[in-house]
Image (cartoon, rainbow, N blue to C red; front, side):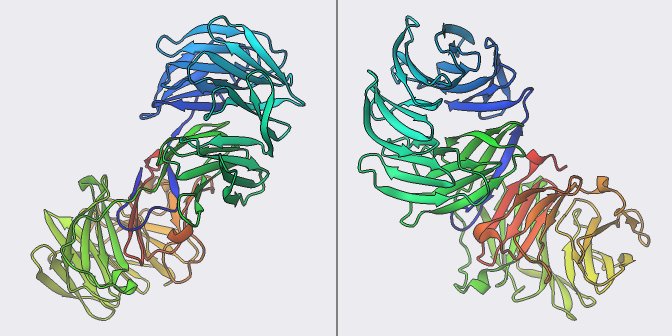
Length: 552
């Protein structure tokens, strides 16, 4: 789950749930919040699309399931298997309504007519069979030049079939006569309103009007694999395609269609994908089923302080997380402090403060008060009651390279050249000091609760200390990964950082997520092991939930 709490629609998405299965997934189908997953183990797993939990197991095939299709409304499920049979399942009882025999090769694709009276199947035996669901009889056989990789009833005409064989897309009447033009492609998908279709052909994905055949948009995948599966979102706005382990999503609704983003997370080739809503995409590969959330615009509903229009005035200069209280707090260049609801993505309150320009700063709700601290290099540190607009205290501080309130709200951490110090929030009494080896460092983006703090160095090494055990001897935490989530945010904003920021698994060394597109450049970031809050020069605040990665 993630929210964009201010700005324009997202240009990327995130996997918010991964469902590993007891078996190897191959294909999936979705209807009415129910997911059916065909496995190499011959079974079909039924998942609840909302919770991701397993609802049932359908057993009956004797070889792996290569194709699935729900009837409209999801009361029936058709499965095709490499055991050369087709089964029609009652989703209320989980039982087999009928088994269809006749193919001499594996079943690679199945489809059920809108009125549920016919089933179409494509096979490696180079035939398309049309079956009567009541009698189980094969009414028509349409011969092909090669194995059939796809067959479906046309969404515009239930008396017409669409097939793919030898990378040729063809249309057939149910009597076996070919109708309409032939296209080159390895996969075809129709929009929900039937006005458009998308074709995968090599590394190209082409979107065309169903009537005029006019090309609406043409995209190319950028990795070394061909695009081989595509689908439309329910609102006809987005088109997704899989190529190897990567999923691409494009926005085709604007006058200038563009890439929304590339979704990386599968470690095996993506074999199937479908939209369950206009902002949720479900994908299957040989290792798991993943749920991806695509950016949703959330309005900033509280506007109490008019902000200047120049971009520099809106740039987020600090961001902080208090997930336990359900909020994120931002402070921008012009001194405007805002609190954001993590779950709804809405601005809860907005306040003007004197903390303007390029200053070190941090904000936190402490004992019900929204407190802001800020300081310029070589200047005083100010503690400000944001809601009352009152200066609580002014403190003499050293030259700073970082300033942060501790997670428990009791201390202020100050990073000087080669020195990390902690001070009592209200008495300014020293609470400990650590001499750092090397001065190219900054406060790490990880912000735990309590009195722990981490520092990251130019070589990306991390050192951490706990200032809560003694006033004079902070305890080092840097020798064990158990003290900190194993996910690391690479690309925090020191002057030497370059390239798009990304999340790295410190145990496996693998990249698990990357901010892309217009979200590559940011001004501030914090995360607590589950939530990641990112502030941008545009004034946008982005909140992500990484709970599905097991980072705690």
